[in-house]
Image (cartoon, rainbow, N blue to C red; front, side):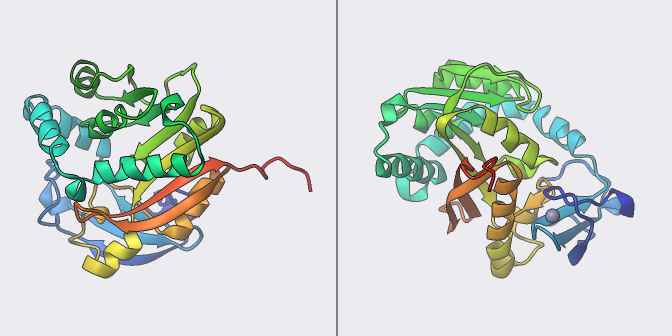
Length: 281
Ligand SMILES: [Zn+2]
């Protein structure tokens, strides 16, 4: 591990507290084909923004190719989609998520049937499939063609865009942009939020979910909890989510830590454009 490469993925600082050195793949972590003799990771908490960074020298681009090139993925997407769609409310992270979002808008007396939603990184598309029952339009964007075909053909979203959110040019504005367990998978989460902010309508909202490193490490340590697995560059706590929002000129209108039906520890936030930004004092 080359020290000069270690910069916090959220704030760019280089002062950390080492919390855990991991030299063996945790039992429940997906095997991505890495050489097991070279497996080495460090969980380091940033002294500045307090986010947990997952540092290692394994290439995550290879990781996603390995995962998504697997022939089984395509055949399984419908099976897994149907299985998760069938979960009752008490067992469904997605149904609880949709309820949180609906409650938020109802409290603000915003008519749901007027809302345009863009979901970034839709994966199995369970969330868009639940959201489409309530909102005016549901769009999704994903790098994976299998997801895009599934979103169009099985879920019936209004717009399915193939590409990397960071690179793609979008000409519309949205009332709601969602990042459900997406930002922890990329090395520059602030850049995506900045881009999303520019795609919001005047009173538009960003909803994000991130892994909660504080509660999950208290409850299960750094080794066995999926929140800290290799796929995540960053794992959060309340102060680091606030920092992330601020770095994108957003403010957290709602910010909470929850334990989900699937056993994930998660922090969610509704972020709005920071009205104080740019105002001269
Ligand atoms: Zn930091």
